[in-house]
Length: 127
Image 1 (cartoon, rainbow, N blue to C red):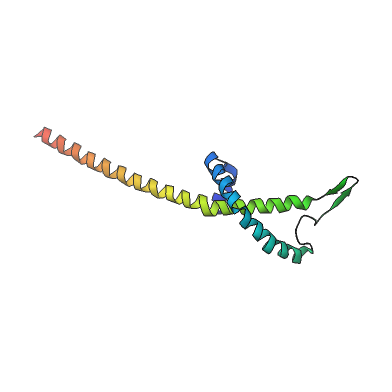
Image 2 (cartoon, one colour):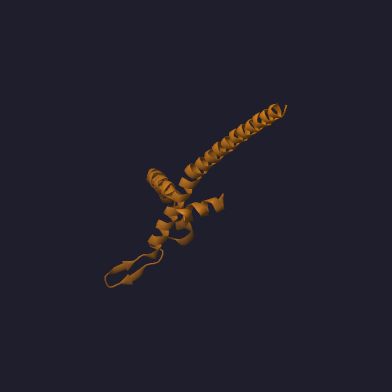
């Protein structure tokens, strides 16, 4: 499953991207709650900061540079991508493979029936 997730992230097909945008927007509140209520307190216990935004602060004359904000956004992105992949893409791929398997069985039955008809016709023609 992890390899499939990596392929999903790297592939970027239009359908999966559209699904990702729609479902990602819907999961935004859930991911934000997980980040605010679970991850930030955990990170605060580990690093002494409630979130990663201010874990490293680079002061400049014009303000502050917060590289931790990028890390927080990256974690949020990965959470959304994982949720979309495991809740939407994996079930859709499973459904598609089941449909493909059923179609292959129907084709195999058709081929077997046509082969039988051909053999019977050849047998009748030979008599």
